[in-house]
Image (cartoon, rainbow, N blue to C red; front, side, top):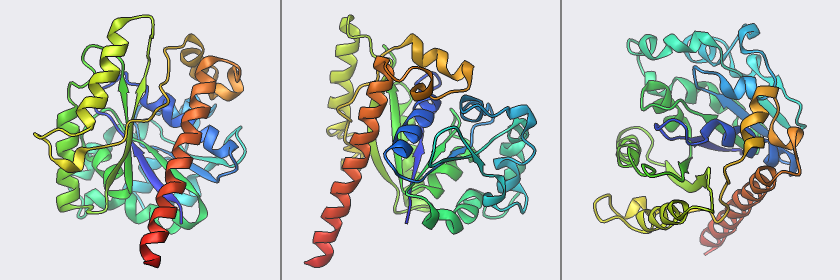
Length: 276
């Protein structure tokens, strides 16, 4: 069965959607069957894969708030093995409409479950907020990937995200784990980048104020600040199709392989535990 991973950070500008597009693309190119769910009302993951969000008739809005099956809205992408559940402007009103719905936190989970066996990885690009759409992503997911920008306020707001994750675990999704943290927009010419990297590793190696659950792996691969990565979405292309030889492309390829390898190790570990 496919693994469902939500990519979350309520702080904007962390490279969340860029990472969702490019991680999903490179994992698909590794031969895995991948689904990317665009749950952000800005629909940048949709346009970043070359789909005109203004011409999308059925989107994740219709899946969450109407009776539309998720499978009916899926679209193929220029990347083999990668499918997209697109978003459009309709999703903007979803936060308000969800308030009055019974079981509102699990609307996405209920629609996603029938498709879980059809994919190896399912990524959810959540909005930069801690509203009901993000809660839906956290309830549907098995784990969370957290992008952290290499800037002065890198850890600002992260404590609130972790507290939200803890509340979801306690009340709604007890199986939710942190897949890992990865750093984005690194400029290794500056001392600040090196300081932020050290601080993030220190923060997630064990924070007494947050508890042992929040000890999370920090990925070795660090995504650099890159003009080519910034340009690719405006052409509706993942970086592998826009400039596969760029440093940003190489780093996302490495991050995808690291994620796959980490999951293979977990599966092998689980197998050993079951065998014992």
